[in-house]
Amino acid sequence: MVTSHPFSVPRLVIAAPSSGSGKTTVATGLMAAFSECGLAVSPHKAGPDYIDPGYHALATGRPGRNLDAFMCGPELVAPLFAHGAAGCDLAVVEGVMGLYDGAAGRGELASTAQVAKLLRAPVVLVVDASSQSRSVAALVHGFASFDPQVRLGGVILNKVGSDRHEVMLREALEEAGMPVLGVLRRAPQVATPSRHLGLVPVAERHTDALASVSALAAQVRAGCDLDALMALARTAPPLDCEPWSPEDPATPAFGARVPGRSPGNGDAPVIAVAGGPAFTFSYAEHTELLTAAGAEVVTFDPLRDEALPPGTAGLVIGGGFPEMYAPELSANEPLRAAVAAFAAAGGPVAAECAGLLYLGRSLDGKPMCGVLDTEARMSERLTLGYREAVAVSDSPLARAGTRLRGHEFHRTVVEPGAGAAPAWGFTHPERRVEGFVQQGVHASYLHTHWAAEPSVARRFAEAARRFAEAAAARR
Picture (cartoon, rainbow, N blue to C red):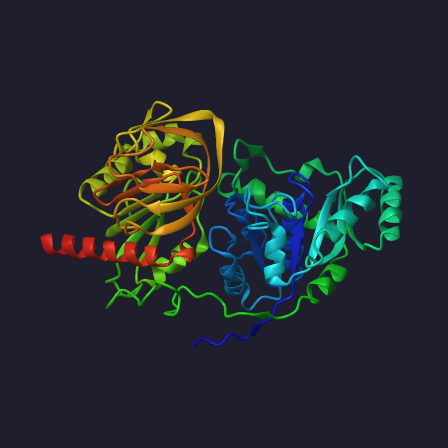
């Protein structure tokens, strides 16, 4: 029986009444400002979003980590948080959507409020005050009283227009008994550019992103009471949980390291993970799980690298924006040929969303790898939402019958949408099959978080080991 021990770190959840209020601005600015004060800051994001954690990582120098109660289950939120925040002086969690918005039709599930309660963390509400004055008190009162288990510790007012506007807002909130922990004026110079799926990822604008994060830190330092915010963070009580570990043999369905293999000793199977500006979507725990399973994880950039990393025995191509780089990806013919040859040889390939597009015949008319007999194109329709899925076909990633929860987020269409051996069967909110399993390839639009089912990392590492041993035997 595993006995849990209290885990304690000062922490804040940055929430808002709705999307667009400035959560990312405030959360990233706070992370950067506290980091510049010399604190080790652990960055976290509620929900499945991949882009905001990139800015968080830039602000703190630590991996941005997601806390998603739908994909991983409420029981893993605190352990995953403790894993990321171990040894830190402060943890900042950026919320998702409005404070009480979660998975459609599932009550509080996957909401910022649920994450705050699971972490026993005080909440700071970021309010877009640009079109209100005294009404801000009624708004904040409603959010503070809606769920008594959510502890609203203060407000940061965003997009305040003038000194007089600030005075009216402060007076209203003082009457309501709600502390004002910061006031930020409109500052378009630190805005980050957006496009069809949200902010432009850090990897696509690294120099400009550094400047934006630095400007956000300066804005937050000037407008927020960092001492009061830190004092509020310190009121968070200890968590009664053990930190999650990718190497923990007690982790459900995980098991031991690949026998006789360890990264860095020359005999670990090499798993190549696509990166660079076109493939920016990944969860830090995936690499950690593969490494714990005995693989050597090597990143490559399909925009620049003309060959897979030496000794590649497994290939992971996650999400991102290949549609923005279709001409450049297509022009890298040597790598496209290498990926096609690897798949044709039966090499294990796990592809999610962007990876699915890259493996097809074409994307918006530009030739891709041709591993899958599909055509992909941009669409006006946004496909967005949580999914409950069951693996339909055995693959190097999942045994048929494996159940996972995931997330779809794309403005592209792949035709056909499923192969003769589909990857997943969706059971909620709609029933349909999706994706492709052929030879060693598992390709799908579904984004998954492997911490919810660590056996998939183990299974993929074992498939890579078998492929590497078979290749060595043929030499």
